Length: 507
Image (cartoon, rainbow, N blue to C red; front, side):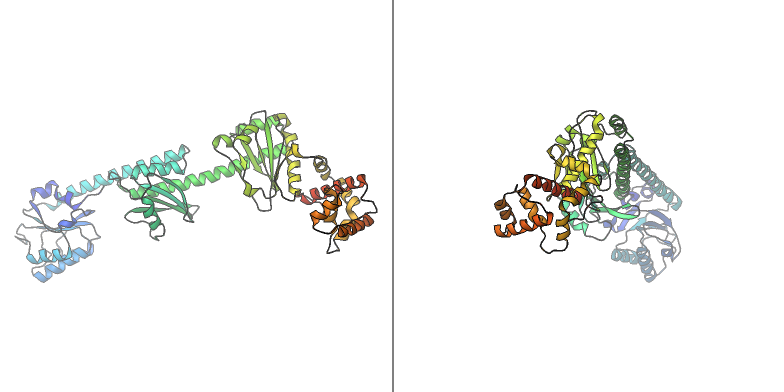
């Protein structure tokens, strides 16, 4: 949406003055930004580029040398064209030196066959330019309103990119600061090659790609690219791309803020349930107020253990699943409360974020949610003690259910010390610990051949170690009741060592 030299020549004022293009036909498509009239020799000092310069020739000089200098200076100042009257005040005919020099410079020269009021020419050009500017401002405001309306309606960055693609008839690509393509809109196709070349270009844009930074909190998050914009009715595709980049930043920032706010509310709600400030039904009602529809039956609690500094994600398959689950970071673990159907049908634990396993409760009704919390935490505690941590269901637990409950107090640690104290004390001073041998023997249910094979040692070596263990404990390992007591003690030791709270030192 620009005003070209060719369009200027079609104005009534130029038509009435019998305007003729003498040089520069190749530059008829250049944009006219302003019109200026002057009769002073050094007019070039007052030009800023893009002007249509009107003159009767009084300041061009009487000699060919002066005229050539005048033309060169006007061209160097960036004038779009030099319009000269052939009215007799200075010239009856444009001097040959002017035409020759303008041809060399590539400056369009226009001759006016009759005298014309320059004020009338200026008025017509300014009217056109003003109209173009008004239409451009109107279009810019409309573009801003369009993107603002999308943001107010909750539109995400994809909807903003699609609108930019529609406005500019361009393929639109969003990349992050690591130059990874985050999303695209419009018909990308062959334009990806141009994008790949332009992605490494340090310049903001090229003739075939508009590149605008996406800024968040003063930092560059990434860039928005409009490839090969072809919208002929759009005054400034660059303006549209810049406003789209701003809208994308607001959308991304709003998403982050909304997620942070939702996480804070979810964490507060689950914390109240854990502390007993809310009953199960009350929790379900409050969760519905946060947009999470749990229902009152078939609920499960999932607890995912965390390493220090580690985060957990629950991967879901869409908005419907997210609306049926609420989760919170509880420090040492992440807790998820969801419907049994949503858990089985959509959500799953990201395996890369279950380094220390987790636990899943039984399926319960809302009134039993506090019990389900205990079940999931018990299963997660057992999972933490396993040699290869995994997600454990509460129903798969055995005697560990009782041990987990005892681990909350001093009784279990005292039991472990009573049963295994001499071995633990001896192992801290020895390079060859005996506890692994005792574990293998107990897990083999007293079968010495199986225990020796598991430890990859000879049976005689196993016999010697078992004799030392019996001597330290003052008890016979042949006694089934002794083996059962020691087996529970090793299980208890695993549970205490895997606990995030105070317990026995890990071995």
